[in-house]
Image (tube, rainbow, N blue to C red; front, side):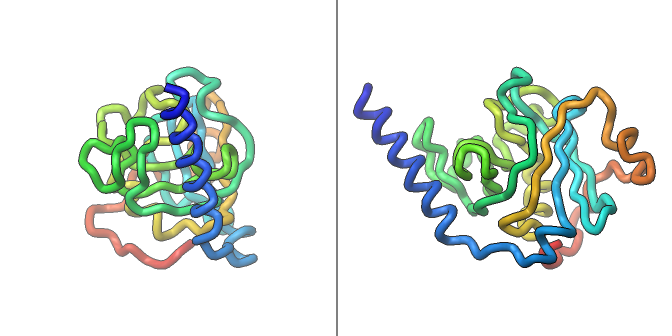
Length: 186
């Protein structure tokens, strides 16, 4: 059992190092004009560019409030087909609960907490994760190419919706239409 734990931790450490080594830094413009806001209280994620909401998505957050950390973090790595170390499920496998895309957050070194897809779409909008932020697979597919390494991620816990916290953004509550342009980074 200890040997399996040590192997798992070594795998996580290696994944974190690979995350950090294989990603180009965000440009200065990306760092200052784009960010993600996640409200654990209403299970919403907003993509913000130049002070304006581009999209607001429903998400799943931690089963308990303490599971999803609060604060301001950064995206430190981007992984396509992430490996799920806890159950040793390879990336791209249909049973992988992380889906196809992973945006690793600076809390936990990029491999412990992330924004990712999922294998259980019914969990979205609920308090269901071990701490990560889950999106519908189509939503993370839209988000992934638009978010640069270095993008700030602010995680808050408010019972008030993002539309109420930012009233000038009200009305933007729908994901992009199917087949929407994949575009460049924001």
